[in-house]
Length: 114
Length: 286
Image 1: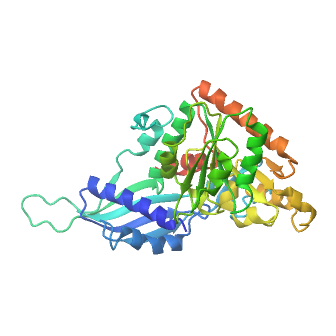
Image 2: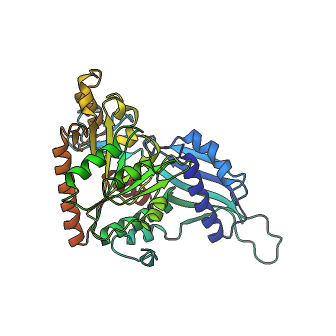
């Protein structure tokens, strides 16, 4: 249950951003969270209001976009879908792949009021 | 130590500062000047920054401290009770005369593990996290105030026993070692893919118990590990009997030598997974 720690780090970033942008309030936050990021989107959604309470992001909506789990095969070069427990090539089955997307834990954008 | 902590810009951390560059603006509202009553101006700011950016930044500082002293930092992760401290005790017994070892212990409560390491004559600092289920770069940074890096060859950071949360936090280590004890089940890599994907080495521990636990197959555990696109080595050890320990010690000696060579060349290294994530997404997307 490290999602609260992650949300506290997010709120710290939002506080800095609001100060830099001279914003009075942050109204919406968009994150991108991949299945290999190690955090659970639903738990982030629950933890965010707790971390944001009495900050510039108090009451802000949180939206989380998914990221596709994709790997590129070093043997045959194919880029295919994968699952968290099987990051193997969908074409030739080789395990020597690189993750193309799926481990994102990103703050994408912020809507604010000045 | 902290007199060196001010944001020193070096080749190793310059990219972090670049990531902190001003975000790109996409204003939805127009500026209202000319004395009209200004409606509330709203805007969207594109950021594309890692949520754990501050932790990553602090981890990079920790890594710089390790590199300044030529110390190899290893993050030990596993479930509670899979034998991390026992492995360290056996490692100290075997290499204490050859390598200078330091240990940072992470637990929710008690000094028990640090006391076990100190009893072996090795300096150990205990972090008690209270309720936190993982170590982060800040906790390790604080602990470094109590650990003399001068003269050490290797610093083990024994993370909180947990196969989930510790995988998400870079501490500044050079290598991740993940333990899987044979009492846990050989499908653990498939169940906790984020953790096992982050391992630079998987150690199967308590292998002396394989004689009575025939449900555990080292081959199945290795297959589940490989299915995570894992090319990292898998070693089987029993800290109790010493079986297989020599291969682990050889890996460790090799990594210590590699760190000395990197230090001499002014280079550093990160566990392979964190490096991938940052390179592929944070910078690539921005």
